[in-house]
Length: 157
Image 1 (cartoon, one colour):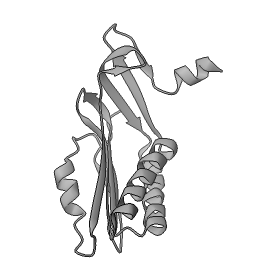
Image 2 (cartoon, helix red, strand yellow; image 1 turned 180 degrees about the horizontal axis):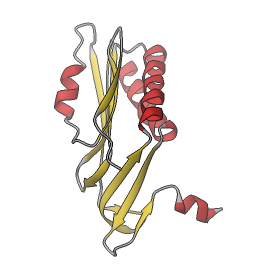
Image 3 (cartoon, helix red, strand yellow; image 1 turned 120 degrees about the vertical axis):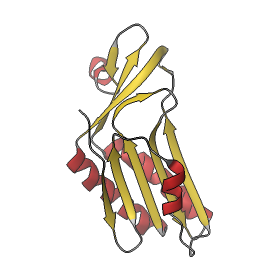
Image 4 (spheres, helix red, strand yellow; image 1 turned 135 degrees about the horizontal axis):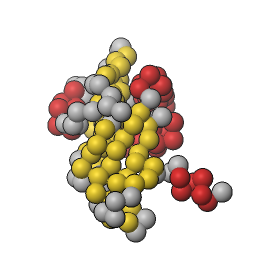
C-alpha cells in the first residue's frame, strides 16, 4: 500500500509529522527546524540494515494507517514540546519499499538547551515506535518475508 505524502503542522512553533512514500531528506528537514531562540539541535535517523535476528535482510516494506498515524504523531510532538520545552520538533516516516541504507524514520528537535533537545528526541522516537500504526515487513535473502513484531510475538505466546 503506497501512502501519498502528507503532513500536519501546528502553530505556533511548527511541529511537523509526515508519512511519505518519497525518500526522507534529513538536510532539508533540519533546515526547517532553525529557530534563533534555540541553542541546541538533536536528531535521530533510523536506517534499513541488512540483518535482523540472524537473518539476512534484502529490503523492508512499511505500511501505515495514515489518518491515525498523523493524529497520534501530532499528539506525540505536542507532548514533547510541553514536557521538554523545545521550540520545534519534526518527524518523518517512510512507507513503501525501502532498500538497505535508506532512511526509514527521522526525528529532529530544536530547543534552548542540549538536555531538552536530547530528551525530546529520545521521547519522540520511543513513542513513535509504540503508538504509531506503522508496520514493518522484512524481506529476506532466502525468499521469505515476515511482519516484524507481529508473527514472532504471536508465535511466542
